[in-house]
Image (cartoon, rainbow, N blue to C red; front, side, top):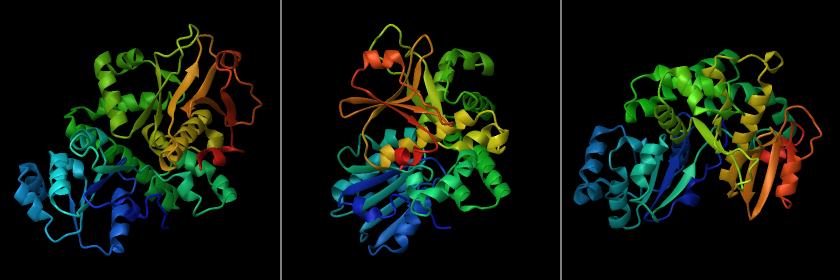
Length: 375
């Protein structure tokens, strides 16, 4: 099954003497996206991988002549897994600044490494695209709303990695997710940050997986996995920067009743979250359906904001007496509150929310209306 991706037509992002940088988790289809684009590309292009030692040496050298010679007579340079090349940002800057008309595509699975190398050197010289696991927006090009809702349990349990979505066999889906979670998920962290123990990282992720939708105490995690608070904070930061989890912070206007010190963490994909805790049970056998639903909706909304250019600051909101709203979007000078519920419920916004944020909106997201919210 061919899955249409949101950035299928990369031509509209390519500009002379600019770089298109595609970030995203491993195995979400960055390489396939490039290969599909190049299969119909009319430009003369050169495609290589950041794992190629010769290419690493050329760009590592920062030698103007060598880098310019590498791109000579080509209109488009494509580097997959660009984060493997030390100093790639400076190398691409040389291409952009000194090869007239050159167009560049670079992909990276690890934002903390690639962004650090590329960000400053390519300021004003790049277009950044974030590619996520398959979104409901993209699936709506394959299925009508009724069909998407029929498959909802599939998205909640097995997630939306492209190969998983394209596979019909349930056991194969499980195998693919186990492979990603065991072999790829922590690869960048283990390689680039020289973290020695993958067991501690996986133990931390399991704890986070059981706390989706709840506030997380770093002190408690430190005690449970047997490492210090600062190391926990550092590992969580690495998880974020390598597209494993998303950190959602509390919202406050400094009202005394509001809680802001802790964070909530969501997984970029439900299937990965379920693989980490080894639970692919059907929905009727689960006691964590609320967490699955909240994680799914939060990430699909994140994809929509990214793909539809909806610019917003995002938070959750909670008071000391346990009044809460799952997701707050601050955009266009207004607050929008969203409560995410698996079961149909008639909910009113919390009294403190109404009193303190008089012009804010409030909406409950359920199975009935979620598609409009995420696509």
